[in-house]
Image (cartoon, rainbow, N blue to C red; front, side):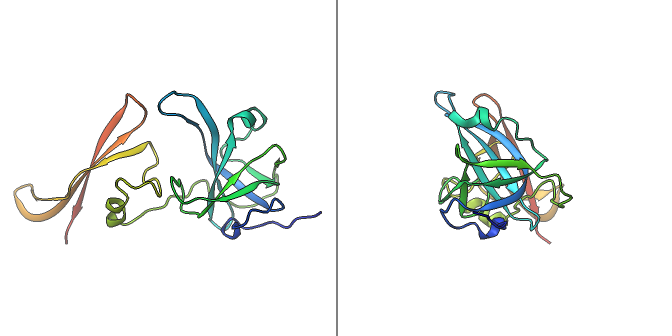
Length: 185
């Protein structure tokens, strides 16, 4: 049975006959934070329409897909799709699950796909995400704390600045604080 290419934005079904052409923009291994045991290999796929989706490969299949490389474009077919409500890494409502039946072939055509896509959100949205597990709010690590907004003077002048302190955790031992200042005009 032949399949036609599906834009990532149209992925919203559980059928296995979908096929996408997409670039891998990120690849990482997810681990259990308590035991450090590997859970899955995960990737972000971006298509030529500038839409992206999270895809996951269960640990028992990672050796079959180890060759997948960030920056390369692939034709991907025969995968499962699941609605994703919590712990999303991109805003797409669905997530791809690669299976033993999934077929992936490097696409050697000249399809033009950007290298990355970032989802920038308003400051108010960041504060709404605190202590909620709907969507991740950072790229480098895990946002574990958002400080309070405070007004302060800047260099002795009467400018109002909203100061926000974010604590981003890279792993169990490494974290850093990011101070963000929002100047009111």
